[in-house]
Image (cartoon, rainbow over all chains, first blue to last red):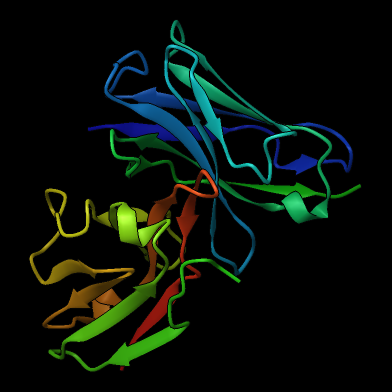
Length: 119
Length: 110
């Protein structure tokens, strides 16, 4: 069974960089069929797609976040990561990682990790 | 305000059939697949319907998806208390180059 687990700081200061890692088990991030993505959900709100990456390094980002987002993949550790720079309180959210299928379906999700932006 | 429009709430009694709508445009639903996600209280979302009307293994056939033009619907038949959750539609938008999610519909089982 494919499992994903997010990890990283739960508290980030304004203007700093949010960094999260998603460790994958039961599947290889090097498999050509899939992408690996990030989605966030502000408290009490809906879902917002952040971006995704293929093991080859190809990425696709939400234009609204593109200037601040970097997603990378480490095939040796079977994980992928999210960096979001210059964070503000508006970036406070539950961050989910997910496997992305060939037609952009998010078919397996991590349990999520809450990141709060506050000084 | 989401580009994919869903009613914020829906309700039904056990055994009933309910439908949740998702309205978009030609740049998203009209020309691309629609997906539905279920988010149980306190949990991560999970894939419920993919490519308009396909169910992943393990999803009961009480759940079905359909699409017509620039709108899509999720139908839940034989409603159960455990179906109480938030439901989100999603689609790729070719104009915005973004994966769009609807605002979500909170389903209450009375």
